[in-house]
Image (cartoon, rainbow, N blue to C red; front, side):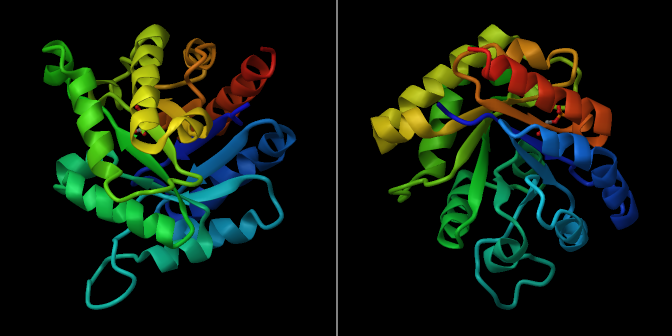
Length: 254
Ligand code: PGA
C-alpha cells in the first residue's frame, strides 16, 4: 500500500520566527500520526532553523524550488546540493513558478533530473488552466507536462506527483473528489506507459488546490489519491493537523 503523503506548501509566507512558531504549534500532535508521511515546505530562509527544530522528528522538510546547476555564477539561486543538505523533498514545477517565473517544461525537466541526482524526492506539480479545462484539454495538458518533465528520467525513485488544477489553487474552488480521482487515474496510466507498471503502482499522486479540513475527506476517500499538497490551509496548525488526521483515518480504514 502507498503511504499517504500530506505536504504543506507555505509559499512566500512566514518570517523565520513565524515559521518556527507554526512548526512548534503542530509538531507534537503531527508526530502522533505515524501512518501518514508529513512534509512542511517553508521558504528557503527558514529551512535550516526549521530543520534544527525538527531534529529527531518524523515530520519531514521540503523546499519549494531549486535551480538545476550544482554551483556557480547564478546570483540568487539555490542549488540541488544546498537543498539536499537540508531537505528530503522539493516541490518542482508549481504552476506559480510556471506562470510568474516563466518555467518551461524543459526547465522543469532539468530541475527534476537535478533533484533526483542530488538524492532529493521531487514533488512534481502538473495541472491544467481554467480555459484548458473548459475546452476539454485537461488530459492532453497533464500528459504533455508529465512526459516533458520525465524526459530522460529512467527511475523516478521517491518522486511524487501533485495534480493541481490551476483554477483550483488559492481560489477556494477545489475540484470534486471524483474529478480529481479521474485525472489522477489517467496520470497513473501515463506513468505506466512512460516508466512501467511497477513505478505507476508505487508512485504517490496527490491532489492540490484549495484543500482544507472541510473538504479533505472527499479527496482522501478516492482510491487513486494518495494525499494532498496543501497551500493556504497549511499555514494554520489546526487545519494542517486535521487534514493529516483525516488522511490517516480514511486511508487506513480501507
Ligand atoms: P492552495 O494551494 O491549497 O492554497 O490552493 C495549493 C498549492 O498551490 O500547492
